[in-house]
Length: 156
Image (cartoon, rainbow, N blue to C red; front, side, top):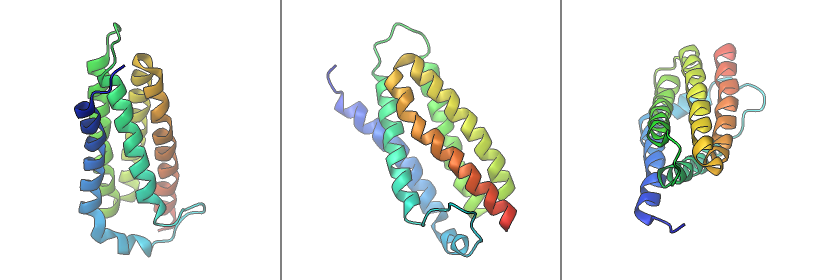
């Protein structure tokens, strides 16, 4: 299969742009966040931007694989809409958590995000199994983020 470079770059740039926008909108809240009591297993602050950058690239690659799938199976449009919806849900979580400091509300939002990521992963997997597999680290990280989010709610 020939690489469609424009589509690949767009698919990689879209989640990075969403994550970058969320980071810009929450950067002032990071100093306050650093003062909060953290649950056990909380990684150092530098891990988060690195992990998210990798996850955004993986999900961008997954979306490219679905976008360019030559599958006769139905569902490509639906899978890409699910992907877009979960990406927008992802964008709103840091605003709820960091900016608004609605830790319990953000936790429930994260549960919604987790379900949306799982749904997207399953749809991607049906169309291109590798695309679904590429979404697994994201689902794992959102699970871990849920633990951290709930821990911060409980400790603060």
